[in-house]
Image (tube, rainbow, N blue to C red; front, side, top):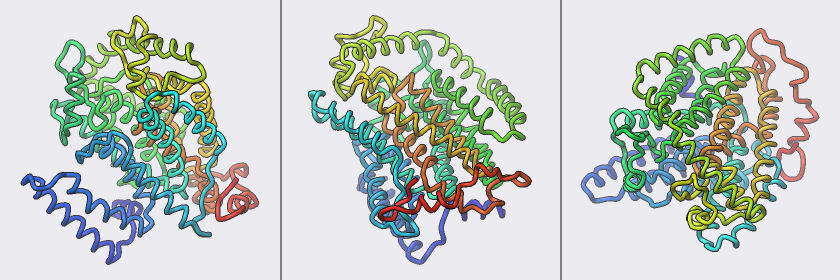
Length: 517
């Protein structure tokens, strides 16, 4: 019972009279709206608008930036991408609007106690945005190119900035990862229900139309449905589940995690593995395997490593036995070769375009690529595609090799900063950072096979996480940690891991109220 109280206290704040009043009004409005919607008197978008705005206003007034960030992640998936409330968005409109508001509130409300944290590699970010901006006039369709630019490149910098600003200490990182984990647990449960029963809960018109256009995503030669859940496509859903698996694993192994939350994290890992099986996505399992090897060998505490390997093997055998039919179908799908052939054809088409337009690309936009790629189509590409099923080839084919190189430079440098951050992280929190690094590796590996980094839900989550673990604020937080919180009980604190007082002072100095390195 104490564990649950401690867990709830870590994930919430002390309520006030104003909080309870607004929360009560919001819940009552929501219940009344559901009743009216059931009677056909009110649209779901209108139903959610009033309580949603009240909740957002409440969170801003209470300065609950972490809770708002968790809300941004949920909105990006459920409202913007899945269109659960009926708004025809499919782009991160509402999520980016809320994220921008949070960033603006933090910037204009900065103080000595809560300074603005300077972003890393701003010149490279400016170079990437500038090079990508040059590709806008070449697209031919201003609407498509601007939309792609904003939803991919704009989303990336906004979410990276949000992650850098909201995570000010390791407890904040823990809370953010727990919220992301709980969202993924809900998606995993929804995926299992869809895969086991063939029924889609919370179905929308957008999803129905998408499934009809894709023939329900049945496995070839069978009536088995691949679970796409709120990510629509089973390949996208498989990537999201694989990425979330290591966020949950990081929470599971962190010494800072309470016993109650550890149980929740373990259950989430099992749900994610089961849901991943129902997507029948070979690339996601491959990426998850790479991430798993990295996480176990590099980030799991040494005293748990042997038992973790035993547990992974045991869970694999149990899952393979309980879901024998699904496991057999997954192996058949992975070894059929038809999917690999179509992927190779898509990559060859993109390489032909890159060879023809190495500096400029063919134009940013899926419909533009669909129309213009026909002249460079590979014989192995049996159906014209709107993207090359590879994020890196997509950037080069859409906007040119300079844009791809700038993107890889930023990603590579931030990965290096993430590894440094892991080494400087207190022992009790290291699995959290290690889990995020493993999740980002999964996203990067899987992006060789689908549009991972170049799809708004994954761009939002990926850049948010990498901004959170590389935030300069964590260095200051680490330097201010008591010595007994830095390492596990009985472990010695290495002198090389201590941030000097002069460096801490430098982080808080400079013009304005910003932390710089």
